[in-house]
Length: 108
Image 1 (cartoon, rainbow, N blue to C red):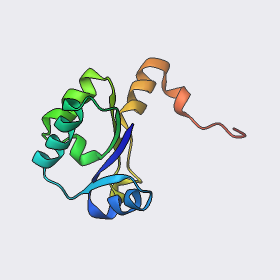
Image 2 (image 1 turned 90 degrees about the horizontal axis):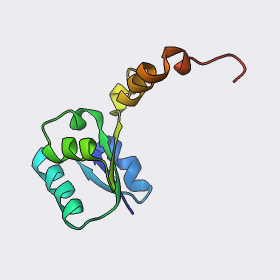
Image 3 (image 1 turned 60 degrees about the vertical axis):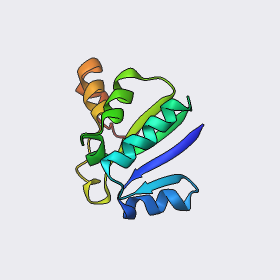
């Protein structure tokens, strides 16, 4: 399984230090081509993508998020957005299980 990270250079420095293949400050076309290549080669991969790029117009990101399969797209916040970051999965959990599930209780 491959692990890949995509985002701005400051965020990608940390992934690169961990030995993870990273793509820093790449265009939407390059990101899309990397994902197309993973699909073409039938690779299994965990792909960390900076939040603003997940929401950009990159066709393969949306396709892979909708179809599932052997390539998992995981959204990560940019360094300046960490404090206000709220992942989409958190909203899904609140809708399905109720907002009380997400509350931190003292002593836990």
